Image 1 (cartoon, rainbow, N blue to C red):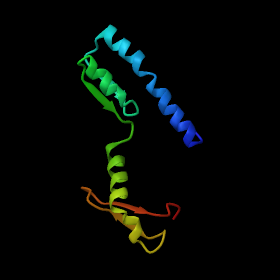
Image 2 (tube, rainbow, N blue to C red):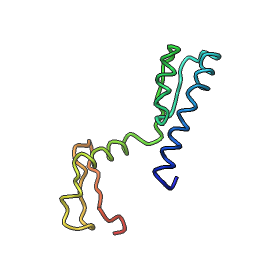
Image 3 (cartoon, helix red, strand yellow):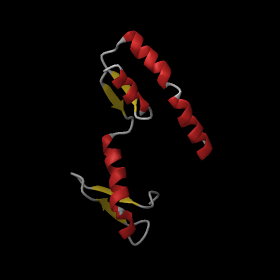
Image 4 (cartoon, rainbow, N blue to C red):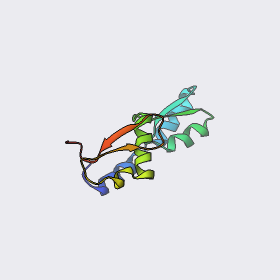
Amino acid sequence: MNSDDMIIKFTKALELLQEPLEKLLEEYHPDCLVAAMFFPWATDAAAKFDIPRLVFHGTSFLSLCASEHMRIFNPYKNVSSDSVGFVLPNLPHPLKFKKNTDS
């Protein structure tokens, strides 16, 4: 998607899947619903039929933690140049990065 407008339209279109999903849940009575994180309304649909819902997230937990720590701690702001390395703080093992990944 090449524009914010398209992303908004796509997200709204995904919401149109809730009603067909609820019809399937009502008809088949599954033991569990596994739905991607991009379908937050699936939680309500599963709850409506008292079905547990698991969230599928295609990104690894390590990358989620690293992204969140980059956002919270901004360790790259303390380096003197793009080629100087920095360690991502508050993780069990040191993860070293450089602002400029070409070097």
